[in-house]
Length: 373
Image 1 (cartoon, rainbow, N blue to C red):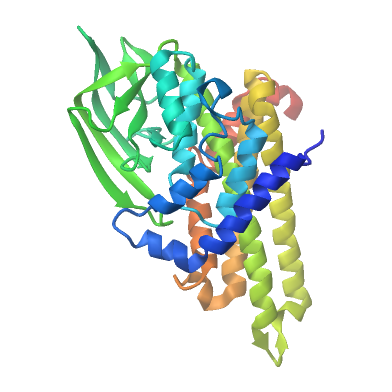
Image 2: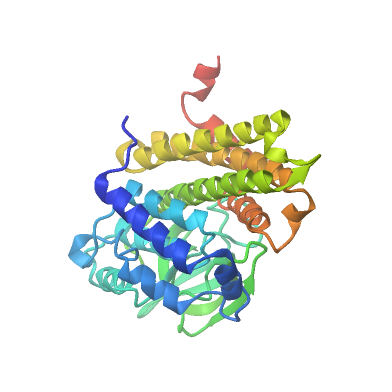
């Protein structure tokens, strides 16, 4: 399978990297983190002008029909630069609207506005007591005369407070259903906070909050949305691993011991080579996950997504730990990017299932027991 980027994809990656290198350096990023909002309207507008928000949207709604490979190109670059804008949350919400009938008039309107950068979206994957179980739902939906209401809570909703609309799963007559809830709906309480990696997250509480049901959505739809979100996180992690490897090599060229740069020590060269190998193996499985997401059977999709999450999680931990060791005490301070890259990788590894969770999921899929025998 050919995983080389097309000319258009490479041009997109180059344009985005040039913008981020010039305008989204580490110090600029840290300044945004410290603001009360935790995100930047000017950078979001720049992403809109670059076409990033329109990329995954269908052409019928003013988008570019971006493929999973187009999206991983973007996510890798955002991961390298430690971008904290609500892009991942929004494109996951876009995928949810696409999977639940993009032609629906209300969905189409939201997609058009998302493509234009007028609104932001977020998917509420987590509940307080659910851990990684997508279907351990205590949020309940109730049908009313003019629609539906939701009662329950969602935790650690990435960029939940920055979103204008949320994609929310809930139990309706015992079945999993998906709903769209507007930020300004009655009966909604939002608690915004900053996570250890500098991102924003929120706790959402619904008390008979007005909601619109996404027709035809089921538990299988919700799982597919989570798989899409997972492989995008894997792509972001690969970009962050690349940046962490680069930062570590550069640091060892300047840090001296016994009168020479520590990069000249063979034992440390071996460790950095291992870090590079971990990153390349993670990249390969991430590419495979992107290929399998929309072109394979459901079980093949699940298998590829979980395999990528496992390998990326292992690589993130190994590369992060080695980078901290090779940076010495500086590796755990807020003054260097390496510490923040490791924090972001740690959060990614524990979002939508950690290594153990996805190993268990992979092993439970048909054919694993026979192959292992």
